[in-house]
Image (cartoon, rainbow, N blue to C red):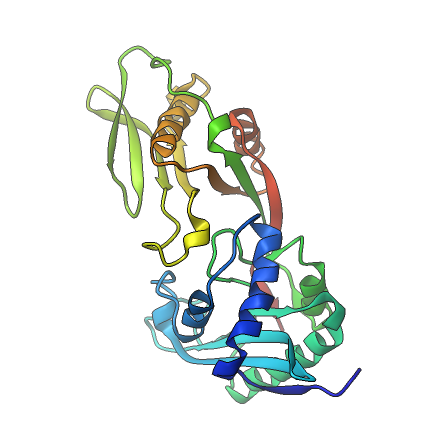
Length: 297
């Protein structure tokens, strides 16, 4: 392997780092890229992770440079050990992400070794790993990043749960149509953190669908315009398999079409066969599979 330098990230690395990040984002989400500012912001804090990010007490970003070319990079965090920190993160260190060009796996291996040394110096109780970038659906280790998966496996990391990432063209989703159950009505309300459509019979809620229709974060991530995420879909047991879920999807789809949303993401486990079958019937298809919850030692 040619001579390489492993060192802390410098601001002058930002353009090459964004190129490396976007090469990986673009294999998960077609046509999507992140601005340099979006990439840089994650190195300082992650406001989207409003539960976990306040537990972080130290951060570090390391890069590998070969002949002035950035070929690998990693972002590390150390969590506090106070009672307010969740049990899974308390005292732990985490590789928030580690990326390298597929032709530079040897540099990725050297970087991973340096990261583990840094985590040891932080005296963390255990080591976690992920590949969470500031874009929807880009978390865990997607199956379209086999070079990253091999790095983690060779370093002794154990994978956690697999999840399926689904995508649908909004144009292909059902139309709302008439209520499938007599007396069924729908109202649009503010949900916990997104727009909700609640199905009711009289005053009784019997189902809901919740979705986030703007993933641009107020326009700061413009390449995510036209993308949405389905956050929740639930129907009470007595009303399942009677068309209520599909009807709710139709109302959500009609709302997205009005807002010029073109694609919507969804997520489920590979063993959730009913959810996968329902999604496929409505128009979703598999985009990728990702494995999250990597641990070492």
